[in-house]
Image 1 (cartoon, helix red, strand yellow):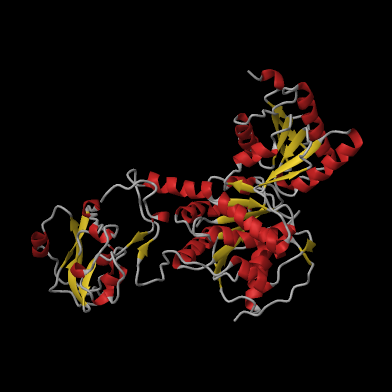
Image 2 (image 1 turned 180 degrees about the horizontal axis):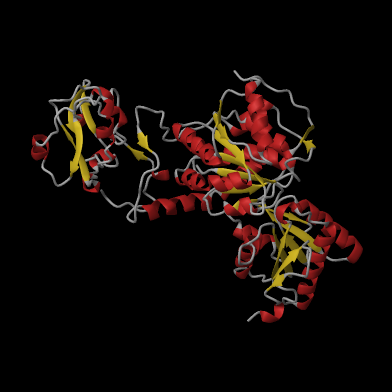
Length: 131
Length: 412
């Protein structure tokens, strides 16, 4: 982005999200949206992360809990079906894994350095109810 | 539709009612408020008008002043006319959000009923809270009586919401002395007052879903400076709009306001510079001293404290020989703010009067006529000597041994 002078910057640092006026943005796929350069969609915060959530499609029940609770809209869901994690915007807070209700969880936090395939291969078994 | 109130030509209102009535006439969309003495009756009065059907708007009761100003920021960003009121500790709690409001260029109006800051706890009037907010990037105007509180509260919306300003505005009045003293106030009728302010003009409203925007962006060393410079420029340029609004208001009401108010200054040799209700007391003392002792005394009062009217102060003090600057706030280890501002202005002026500083009236201590006359006489002594013969900073109206700092002989 071009560095602007004080006389050129937007009053109050109010940043537009899209290049033009939008309509029906909800049904426009992310990749087709006309994001402005000032939209944080184009800014990666991936390197903030120390732990990452890994998503296991085989266990997920598409309850959308993680999607509701994610503070950075980094859960990608389409037509109420979980797709996965937006690793460009996920900061690794762990809220999604915490609120995941399945047994075992469908979202588990792993160290950023662990490969996702490796993480999925080491997924825990279903826990038995303790009496 | 909001009901209208038929107002008398002359109403008997205290400063808080003056604030509440002007806020009612402005037809604010959202007031988010938390009560605190002595500003409580402003928002209480406003809430009653709203409950009784005289306002179409929302009143949000919140859990603290930090939340009150946060609610105001949210509502203003959403695209509404917004105001609240506070005092003292509540003002202090708002401080973080005051900087957010000015940085986001949201024209929120804040009624500040000035009160001392603890500790020790005190509910009475001084200017500690006003001074605490002076770097927050808000336009700050000061009312010296209830009429001015009403007038300036109306004008605050028109000034802050102007498209070339878009800055929040604080309207100050003295706690109790002004806020709780019933005085004659000549209001405008509802339609006249509302039409003077005009409809709210939205700028980048968050509720425009066709143009989503981010408020409160993070900017680091590569962008922050430019935004803050632009904000400062808007504040420094705002007197053009402030003076235009003052003029339009004068045409409507007959009441004149200036960036810097001057009283008895045409031939004055010595002047007091002060804020708040002390201004009227000082004018009385100046009149009396002119009669009794022939001292050519005058009074200068910045109507607008931020942006500071530097050239207006130079103009007002261009012919005086000595100036006494009165600060109603403990300056915490230096000279008072008015002393610093006035002295900086006069250092660049062709006239260089002797300037000294008085700290007075903390926690609502009365500023008496005797105190004010003594200050004028000391200014006269400085004027006659053509140099500082009094201490640079003194405490006026204080019990115990005379307290002063930087004696005349200590000046290097």
